[in-house]
Length: 87
Image (cartoon, rainbow, N blue to C red; front, side, top):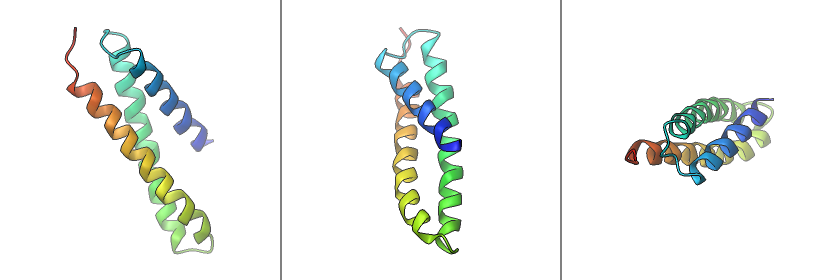
């Protein structure tokens, strides 16, 4: 379920950013969904790193790089929204 929320917030922020987050409605939505995605992916990174030392290390090996990429994408979305000037 947690993976579904991360994917949904990723698609929502990306779609809203494509629509150009310059309006007073889409700009906060992109920032909020990106922030939500960052929180989820950081938690998933924590779970993946802790799984590396346990019995399910293969899950951690797959999930840590994946969620590291997601975290970088979300941080880029937040940077893009914050650096864009309002119209």
